[in-house]
Image (cartoon, rainbow, N blue to C red; front, side):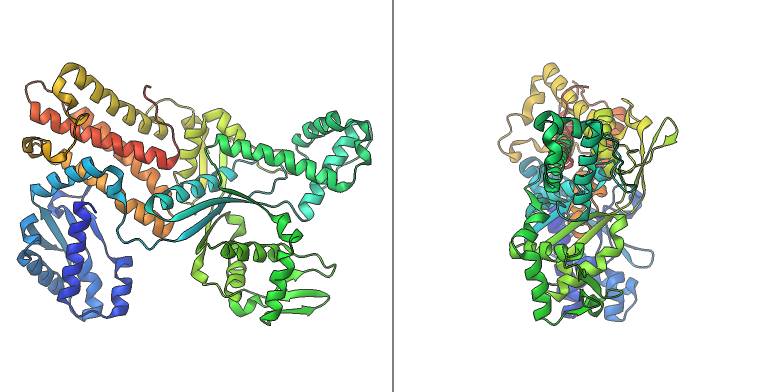
Amino acid sequence: MNLISKIRLQIVDLVKNKFALSSSFLANLDKSLELGLNIDKDPSFGDLSCNIAMILANELKRSPREIALDIKEAILQDANLKKIVVLAEIAGPGFLNLTFDHSVWRGLSKNLLEFKEKCFKPQNLKKEKVLVEFVSANPTGPLHLGGGRGGIIGDVLGSVLKFLGDDVEKEYYINDAGNQVRKLGNCLKIRCEQELGMESMLPEDGYAGEYLIDLAKECIAENGKSILEKPPVFFENYAIHHLLKNIKKDLSDYGIIYDTWFSEKTLHEDGSVKSAMKLLFDKELAYESEGAIWFKSSQFGDDKDRVIQKHDDTPTYIAADIAYHKNKFDRGFTKLINVWGQDHHGYVKRLKATMEALGYPAESLDVILNQLVSIKKGGEALRMSKRSGVFTTLRDIIDLVGKDVARFFYLNRKADAHLEFDLEVALKKTDENPVYYIQYAYVRCGSVLEKAKELMPYAAFLDTLKNVDDIDEQIYDALGKEEIVILKKLIALESILSGIRRTYGTHMLAYYVFELSKLFHNYYANNRIIDSEKENLTKCRLMIIYLVRENLSFCLDLLGLSKPQKM
């Protein structure tokens, strides 16, 4: 645990011991409590601002300012806290602003040097076995532009949760059963017929993209003209196999590696779908009506009951989904996270209803809905549709702007906000491009450290450091206001990552790494980093740059972005 976390914990423990608080209040305290470091605000607000008095007001039936005064006095009398809090002030309706002694920043510097990214791990984490399912686009064509957004959200979320200590797996659900697959196989056969000179026509709702023409040529080359004698399932399997292979390649080049590719077809073949429906009947949560089988989803908050088996005995999509999510729990996962497009918003309630009906806690399933993506090219918005054949694929974007830019641009907005992918900015190799800006900060940090070692042998002190206590205290004493602001920003990553685990807001990591890069670039521009006449100050600033580089390296890894050595 880093020093700032220890201070926060001491304050919370002090409050818990001072006031008589109900167990229900204490159980929810962490959700509303804010003990935030002051990085960008007015310095008069101190180093740490606390809203705890306002949270306690309703529970204690007292004014926030009165409570804040009690907490202030308790802090200044506490044997440990009074050594590090040099000023405690009450502001506004009841904020408590604390200013720390310089020893705090010395201690935090040592923490970051010694423990590096371990400083950002929470203590006493209640570990979950998490399955993050994302993208899962029907393998009926190339991955389109919109699929990249859910991909980066799921991938980064999985990486963050894994770092924090959860047991995480990433999964792609292959929709390789049902009417869309049959339609795909039929369209491929028609394309083969056309290639062999027949005047066959695609159905109006068929897949019209040129990718099926290319696939038909490949299919004929491999199997000859007798291919038309093959049964429908051959064309279905051939199309799914080859299109899925391309999807896997695109996602791999995008930096996404899944732990599992789960086939929907297996749920039908092994009887899981029928078993799930039987379970609903056994629980008296399914019934027959109008020749179909219905699930009583309205009992669990859904708008109406849902058909799970049609009158022709074919199961509906929700029947397979019930079996699939039951399978997830049967595999031992305690938290399911699905990343879906916004067009699935109406499906969330009914899926949660099925989980509740099967006896699983409603909170064990979370769904992240990401809004649509649009792209402008030459001032013209491009349409996206596999069926019409007019769309921009994820492969197009990766090839055009590169993996790093694609990943960051997709992540750099809240999931529930519409994303406009600006190709003009994405293609720039200047500070206007946030990816260039961030990676240049990483490269510049490394360049400064190497240049310093060339000019002054003592600048290599961090390379040979074995114990943080071996660093001369005068180096820590040289920490000024700008260095302390950077230290605050560095340790703020702990709260960012914990916030992502709580809210799934992966965009916060993109915002954070950009803000840290900006802080560094400004620091570099405003200060003489290497000063041969001021050894301790130079070492102090090199230490800060070293810590920034370590932090950027860690964040770039979480984001799945490359770390260039030169630019």
